[in-house]
Length: 521
Ligand code: XMP
Image 1 (cartoon, rainbow, N blue to C red):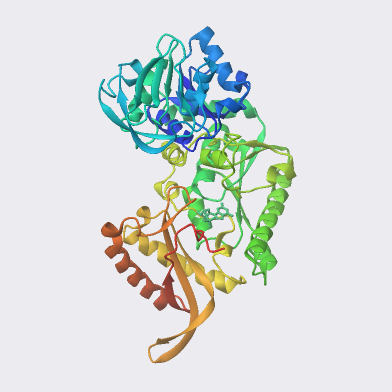
Image 2 (tube, protein in one colour; image 1 turned 30 degrees about the horizontal axis):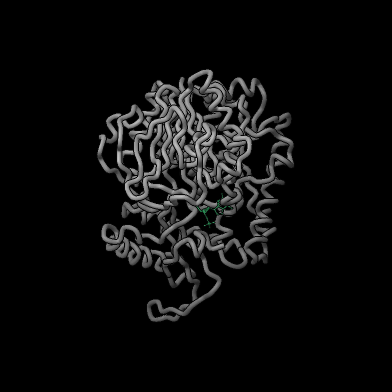
């Protein structure tokens, strides 16, 4: 199978390159620029991606130069994008000027000559919209290279190639949608590499199953399954690979959605799971605690304690499975030393260090939608694959103030009505995440002829692509769903207030993230 290695020097767009290549049926991986040459030397083609540095500050050229040297001996194709172009030019002795011809945003380039990299993409003499994002620019053309395109306004060297060496460079970003037809340029590069386009989810599953079997032999694996998409898909894949060597544990914290445990048992019926009810322990430890961080800490520590206890009961466990996915890896800065940590992940943080277990992360190289495809391919239901995210600390961060069993029950009822009604209105799949929050205040109401004094619940529904930023629904799609959503809110409001005793007022949270977060605590 042919595969492409993408070296990331810190560009915000690197993941987009990887996604597009995989969508074209070719396997690729992103590596940081401090990757060991041995790790990548067997790849069939290389993409040197963008980055904020200046080549003039880079003394030895690092992994990029080793790849160019490999090209010298093995003629493996290289595509340099933005900083990648500058690195290649610098290697061949061309001048790269700092703060020269800076461009940020959409601009036009003119195609001057034909080349295999732009075959059927752009015609000679045409002017094309592309996205540039650079301070430094290449000032002189390296020997053996031809200029294929240059900037219309300030004549930036936009595409240069050395067809014989199979080295192609663009100063702009072909991977972003603002570059018209840019993905076709990436596709041409895959043709130049001679990639077979046979990377499918099925081939990935077969490959992973083999890898998992070889890695584990007859060793035991333990997994904490929350019922969320990632841990469920990871467990289902592991289950296919190693069957009963996998020990799945589901811990009921007492802070789950109503009947969540039963729903998960039904959805993951093919996986043998040990259900541990520790709700009394969690609720007792949370008694009287109101500070959000303290709640999270108590839950995290208790979780680890229970998990450890169960692992000891099983005995001789060597591996811990985690449902880490590619965006987690990239966001926490592990795929590249250059992207700053965007958020620290809190799934079952701390477990491996404390328990001395080796980690196995079968979804580590997959994006969220690929995880969903994998889940579908191995037979998980849409109900589990397309469910909204649910945070590890559960309803504890949705009950503002102290947590009691009674409050958990109220919130579970409200949440069930909210989500089921949303599904009845066919809105659930349009919304990235929705939930209810129980507020620590009571307000006055009137029901029948009597005065009430009950809880306020806030409803939240957001659109997002990754949870890093979010908008209150239906902000983005005002015209399409606004009236349906308003009708839904009015209806769900009256169902909740009429059916959940103790709640007499509903408010809707319209704040985006930032400045708010998605969860309230
Ligand atoms: P925030 O509230 O930070 O949430 O905007 C972003 C996304 O992360 C989820 N979330 C968590 N997920 N453990 C998790 O597994 C946690 O401790 C946690 N806290 C927040 C949240 O539901 C949203 O989807």
